[in-house]
Image (cartoon, helix red, strand yellow):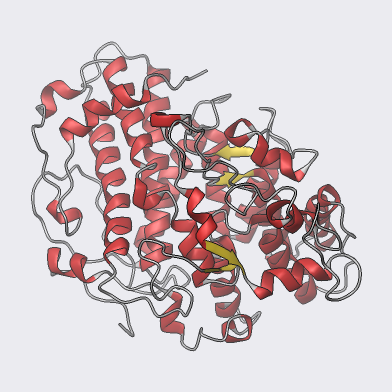
Length: 472
């Protein structure tokens, strides 16, 4: 089993190798760098760089972006001062948003670090490393690269159109100097993501701590990616393999146990490391600057009792228990949202950011199975109802395929709100697939141009080969 040791110390090696400019990936220039020849010397130094790659995913600007995505979609609203929050509630984000620049650059820092590690390990610089350890390190680095590209594509590219030229800039080599490069097509970006995740699924370690990514995490993310690209049969098979894993991952008996147990939860497949004090975690304590949307509230209210009889006093009566856990007086905690219970006081425990958990894989399986040619709607329904059973709400009764797909979308909102923005991407995908009209879900989604965030103006200044998204 891999362990995560001395996280602050192990990042020092990577920090010396990688610096980050203010404009874009094209400005990456190492500061006080070690030479490429002596940074990775053996297995231990390769592992140090890998830990640094993981740590980059916990940086401030990446560690609470789900809050922005929730406001951009139909989960919630930004109600207080949130860095870069302007325009997200109304789907009118300005191109001058500097926070978006940092989100963009933060993902490319991970990609560049992963590229460096892959390049050096494949070149044989880690002397004496076993083949098993080599494959483990490479698979984790490739997962991080794939995950970052998937996020970038969903935020800044037309991820829903495989024929679109509006992908993102693809780099597979370590960059240490300015080198402007245009965007790749959406299909080209997906090709790299799928290739990296297939490698990870085949070669990744098993029985890893949940803040590392093993073979199972690669399979889970690959199932999601295949759902996005329309390979529903492949997605359903992979999701089913993850659900029926042999590594002990299983749904928690109680919804609240997921968040009480943090990344130790039996259903958390990948969540960045979070610890007390300086060990760090996400900045999801800033969820106290948001609130739920009326869409989420009314949907939660409709699951139990009569219309508009929900009550958040006490433990929260007549609401979906997942909504009550997050927002009732008894369980909402210091941040007014029970999924992220830890405040920002010095030395306190830090909050976990949930990138992948098993409940989402159940819903990926449900949708993929429902959409695939000749799909088994009863099997799809069973995956959906497994979550409703756990939540303690009435199981869905099968009517037809269209109704089932809508039930799956709504269930994802009830299950995953304020976790990773997935309900927002569902709105986009369902609109493009003809299952709904986005403006009927959120009135400010008045144009398909709003399905993609703008390429930040600072990025365009730093890389003049990149063109802006339509409508900005």
